[in-house]
Image 1 (cartoon, rainbow, N blue to C red):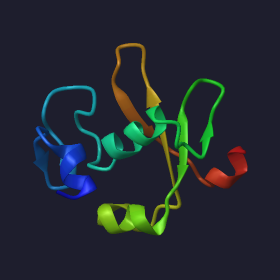
Image 2: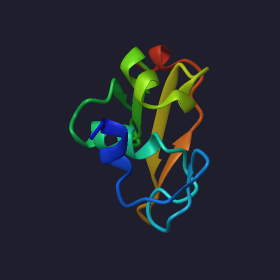
Image 3: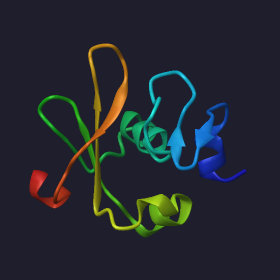
Image 4: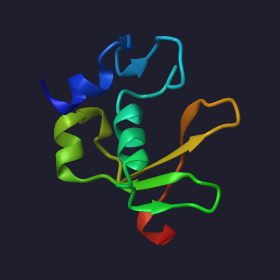
Amino acid sequence: MGRRAEVLEGLVLQGERIVSPGKYENEMAYVPYFWEKGLDGWADAEADNGDFIFVVMPEDYAEFPELRGKKGVRLHEDEQGFVREVPVDNPVETY
């Protein structure tokens, strides 16, 4: 089983979006993948508010083709526990 399949196990997708209820509802399929990486300490940076920031690497594109065109991913967990992707123009500038 590939990393994508592991991360998305039990989640319902419609196209590239997660539609099953829960903390990732209405987010892109790659959000749980990066969130788990952040929780495991693999974020490239962490913002003052706790957001995880990642530089998208070739292996990320291989697992999640929907990342095409993205250089970085920034994730925020709100006070209700929902994880959301927030815009990041250039993740390298956040270091």
